[in-house]
Image (cartoon, rainbow, N blue to C red; front, side):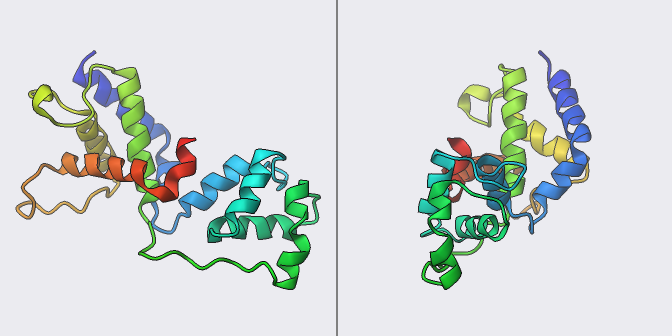
Length: 193
């Protein structure tokens, strides 16, 4: 394994998926909505029966994104699984209202964070000797975070608004923080099940 091979692998992957990456890292991309629909709803706009349907009905009580998915499912004419059908009348009558958004600012960089997380993961899966990030045990080794950042920026993606002289740490250290934040964010919990 060489750094050139790892870099070439990452460049090929980014080139192959460039259009989709542009779509996903757009700040207006609704990452969680997209992901939950893919996980819980089939191609015919019917929720999967069993745990996915139960998950939708329970989370819709406190989560606006799941509530919106539930309403979209009930607005189409297809028969939904029983737990979802049981809510049809209460949603139509207004008794079951959309929950309010939580406190804090919207998480608009989830798509970017997902692409970084995934690209680093596939680089490390293919080239297991590469360290994740910088550390005392990785001196003189280029980490997967730096390769991912360099390859994405070379392909024309604006990943980090890095301003030389403003920060004391290298820019790829920010990528390490981004990946950790993505993993620890409670809004992304479904992604890791």
